[in-house]
Length: 154
Image 1 (cartoon, rainbow, N blue to C red):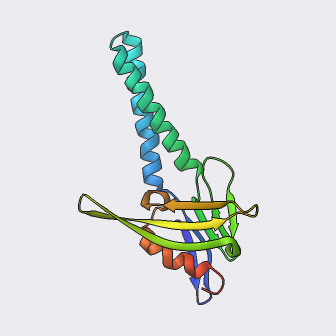
Image 2: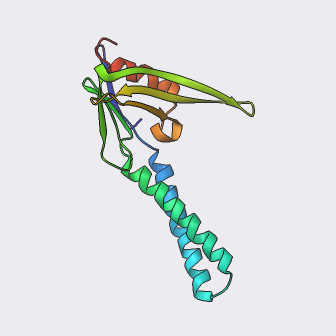
Image 3: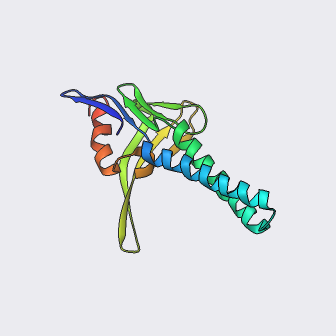
């Protein structure tokens, strides 16, 4: 969690973002794969390797850009929750947030948790948002109580 303050009344402002170390690693990996691909292109050899390098570097760069752009990924305050991705942030007032819970999944003997927020927009359309550890930079199990404390009335 990047920044939060909790008082007896709950959380005043809570922010969760992708881990900065992960985002920096993605940028470095994208640059390294891009450099490798450029070296292959200059040598004129290994056309399939060049294609693989271009696809990989592009994918890493898009993921790194998303991690940079989506900061903070989730913001909670007394007014509601704000979710940020590639586009403009979307604010969901607390009265329109219908459910906030943890969803646990077990695969290959490992249990993972996702934070699920179910909201309705002002125009009546429903929106289901799922956040994992990489989205939040924290364990969703730890985020849930802080997020619920930010909601007026607990």
